[in-house]
Amino acid sequence: MARSYLGEARRRVGPKRQRIGPIIDRLAAEHADAAIALRFENDLQLLVSVMLSAQTTDVNVNRVTEHLFRKYRRPEDYLAVEPEELERDIYATGFYRQKTKSLRGTMRVLLEEFDGRVPRRVEELVRLPGVARKTANVVAAELGDAQGVVVDTHVRRLSQRLGLTRQEDPVKIERDLMRLVPRADWGRFPHLLIWHGRRVCDARRPLCEECVVSDLCPSSRAQPGASATSSPPSRS
Ligand code: SF4
Image (tube, rainbow, N blue to C red; front, top):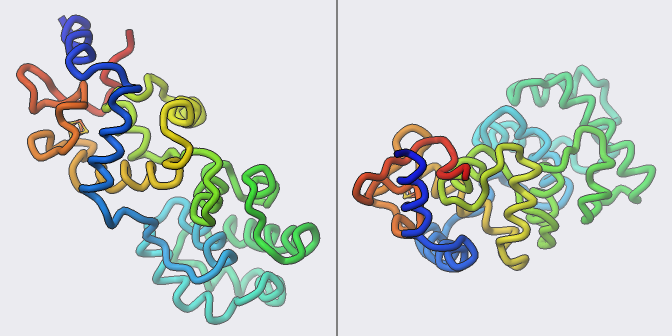
């Protein structure tokens, strides 16, 4: 029964290649303010903010960096103090020992290999200590040259519910989205899903009746007999 319902839901909404354009357009109209919530004024501040945002909220990071960025302005500044001092300065973001290690390692590599500047290519960014692909993708996208699609918990959940991927692994989800989403939209697409996920498509209680892409979503419970879950809408 579940299987036949899923098949019916997929037929109702049509192929994902036809849906992706309207999905992006409608979400962009609905969430015109969707953008990164971290506050930064230059490339280095962006990189540091994204590194600090692991396992904490953007609000928390902004609170810490408001003071941090007054004290640490160049890569050299992060290396000029004892590690314990930097640990204290970023303590409130959590995992402060590991983050201090990553920040100092990153600043060292920036100075030694990149002339003190933040590189723009993902393959260069991931050479920085503590910078994984997701961080690199966020930084590259914010610098105006998205080279992949950022996949966080919201992007994963919404991509699955919208039937844009059947994968669970973030790397495979990113690969599916890169094939589907037009390259020009790689940067803004994750923001649209993140904001839609926060405001409408909640993990536990999606507001399908108020959702602007309800008729394009195979998981919509606004349709007769349908029910949105945190699971992918289809596996067949
Ligand atoms: S219709 Fe429901 S499940 Fe689908 S994207 Fe909208 S809120 Fe989420």
